[in-house]
Every structure is written in structure tokens, then in C-alpha cells.
Length: 368
Image (cartoon, rainbow, N blue to C red; front, side, top):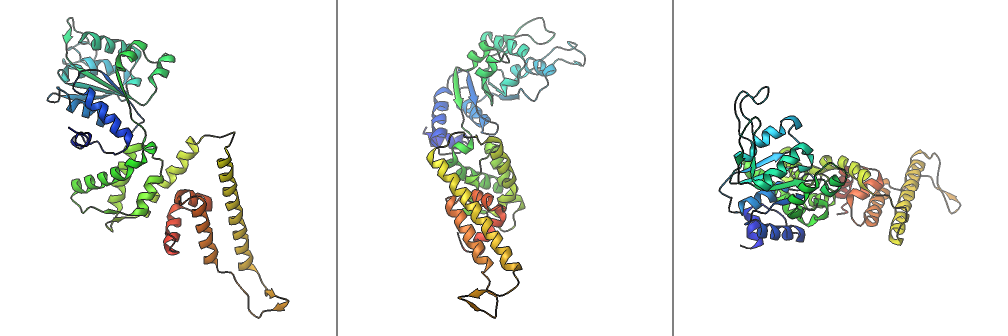
């Protein structure tokens, strides 16, 4: 089976070298029972790859159980994982199987493994190594045959150094490690993902598939996607739900991503104390643009409020001469786009206008 066939079979979308490399590793390790640890920010699709590993293994005909360790309260996590006997604690009105027993013969995917309490980590390590555990309140052990796949958005080595994660469990889990890069680092995948989500949503809701305009795609490519693939999917679906024209323009997305763009950049952009020559030149360009904008605004006010006649070559004209505001506005937008190399998001920020307004003006002045 080729990488492309494997991706299609397991709903892995993307053509970047990073995704192809990860898929290749998945295809190699899936047939074995080796433990896999998946790293990646929230929303990058860790569960997709966990499912692909399970589906390509000899356990594919068995159950894959997904457990979000961060979503289960510490007091009941142990019972959820290993089960309990009737009467083992207050409220245990009947015996119950845990996730390990439910996944017997299959795969147990432990998402957000870094959130697991240290006391539970001890018992998890034991069941991984011995393939047996004791239910709460039980007097005998239960044997299971489960493959473990774990995932986290935290650096487990750092968690170990801070005493929040057991080192022995960490080394046991990281037999094979996959690191899924954030969407902002593989923007080549955005177009394919966007079209995939458009097709999926349209099919599920039995509607005509809308067209994604080029300017809308450019906006999606420029946005940093702090929520990664999950955020892209939700944005696409919201835009389609609110759309009535059958065509997704840039305006369909501006209100969904613009506010988050500024928040993300303020939160994540590093501060450079030493600038390279290119960075210094860029900063000078930006400052110059701001000064040009300021001068234009002052000139606008002067023209609008000026009372009197304009003297030309020592003479006096009977009529006032006014510089067209639309020409000034068009030139300012054109200069901003040139300086930012076509980035409409950056140009809107430099001009201190919304992206929605900028897209409207670009269309009005035929600058695209």
C-alpha cells in the first residue's frame, strides 16, 4: 500500500513532507504492538494518527478505546481505567469494567497523558509491563492484552524534570515517538484541508458544495491557526452555515478569524532585542508607511476644512482645488499592499482598518 492510499483509507489529509514522513512511520510501526507516544498541540489531529495505527494493526477488528485523562476527575480516573467491584467505595452499587478490560485485545488511546495523577501513573506502568491489574475492591488480578498509544501537548521530559511525571513511565511510553507539527508550520496543507472540510460538511448536510474563492483561501493561508486543524474545521463549517451565495469569499471568514489573529500575534510574537539588517529595513518601511498615512490624514482634514482659495503661480482661482480622497485612499492601500508583499492581514493592520473593509476597498478600487 502506498502512502497516499494509506492516507485516503485513514482520513489523513495533507501533502506536506511532514505529514508524509509521519504517515510512513505509522505504516511501519502499526503492525507491531510497540507503544507509541504522540506529541502535538491541541487540535493537530493526534487521534487521527492513533486511529490509523490501530486500523493498520492486527487488532483492527477489536475495539479502540479513547480516554481523555484530563477530562476525568482524579478521584474516579483509577476506577474508570481499571474498573471496580460492587461495594468497593461509596456509590459503587454494582461491579463495572474499566477501560482496560473493555479494550482487551484492542488498543487503548490515552489522550492528554500528562494530566494523569502520579498515583495512577504507578498503576499504569505496572499494567503495561505485566499486562495485569486489580480492580478496586477486587482480591484477584485481571489479565489483559492491550496496546497502548498515548498523546500529549506537553513536553513530557520537562514534566519529568519538574516531578510531575514519572520517569520510568515516560521511558516506557516513548518507544516510538511521533511529533505532529502545528498547522501554521505546514501551510501547504491548508488548501487541501479546507476543501476536505467543505466537501465533508456539504455531504453530511446534503447541500450544494460552495466554491472557495482565491482571496478567501489567501486569508486562510495567512492566518496562524492557534487552534490548528480543529479551529480550521470549525471555521469552515461556520462560514458555510452562514453563507447564502454558494461562494465563500474573504468576507465569509474575516469576522471569524480577524479578532483572534491580533490576540494570537500579541501572545506569541517574540521580542527581538537584536535585529538583523532585513528586520531593521522592514521596520523602517513600516514606520515610513505610518508617517505617510499620518500625512495623508492631515492633508485630508486640511482639504475638507480649508476655507479660502488656492493660489497657483501667484494668481487666484475662483474655485477651490480639491485633491480627490478616493485617489489618496487608493494609493495608501496600494502602498500598504506593496510593503507587506500582498499580505492583506498586515496591510489592514498598518492602515488601522478592518480586514473586511480592506477587502471591500480592494474590490472597489480593482487592486486585486
